[in-house]
Image (spheres, rainbow, N blue to C red):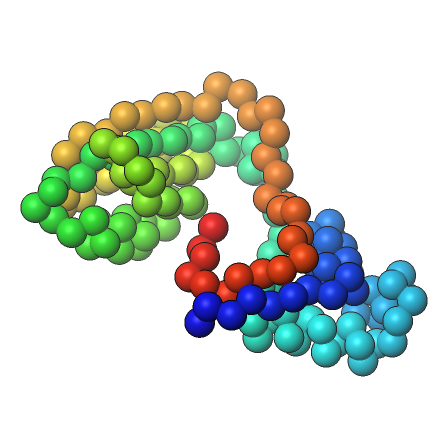
Length: 164
């Protein structure tokens, strides 16, 4: 599907507010935006059906739960193995929290959060043993400075295969 969905100001404001507080009730949204409950419900259903809203989840402060290690990996893939196969295999590893196909000599980027160095070593070895992974460049995060999952809401949204 290549059509563009134009977001009216109300839908844009709903998305902005839900990024700030995903638990905000439809009623609170309607009151805050000076509109009807039905209008908010209709817009959120359209945004959900259109794939703009995927799910609601709590964003946790991992360090307060004991996660001390953040691992970032750039992986080189054997050209004889389809990169999609490698990505599908890595996607099944529960400790991997972000997985991207990128450009360059190391076209797979992995991000994981681990409770300990030992857990980090086990995960790294698991990834190293993945068929198609030739080399890994590792980076360990020393200090988290900013982590913000919110995005600027554009006026027009392309329904092309955009997964970022």
